Length: 199
Image (cartoon, rainbow, N blue to C red; front, side):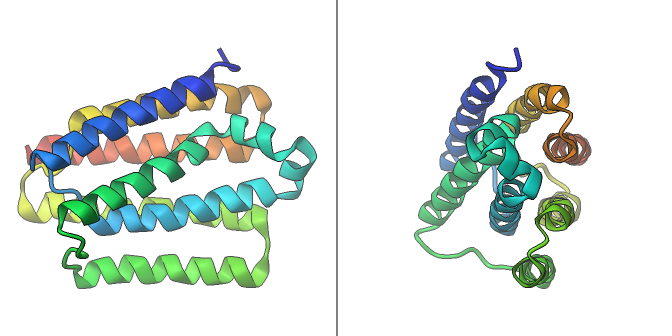
């Protein structure tokens, strides 16, 4: 299972992307644009710091990516979702709130620290905080608007993909590879709970 896990994760991520994009095009959901922008920053920094970590270099880039498949797959999925949102909005950036800019500023700050310190292990850990921050604009929208603006099915599929991604990570005993899906699973559960309340 641990060898096939990365491929299963990739398939599930593509399915989630298709379902999410379909919901956007049908105007069934109204995702927070800033959530996905912060996700992109967080995912790229997380992936870069994970691969460049000294222990990661000993294992090799490809093996590290296979041990942390969600991080690699997420990068592709998030880029596609941002492109779909921008195109669906007529190639204009949706209106952003002060809260959105606050979350983005925190993301830029962590990015600057990564560039300055070059401590990949530490930055990978801190970047998981950025990934948590990314959920805040969506949570705020759900709470403030009092309606569900997200897709239960898509988030469920992503949650399942993270559970499967945890299998090779746990067998490798790599704490960094385990942290990424564990953080994602926890935040997806919290977000979906708020979605359920807002429905």
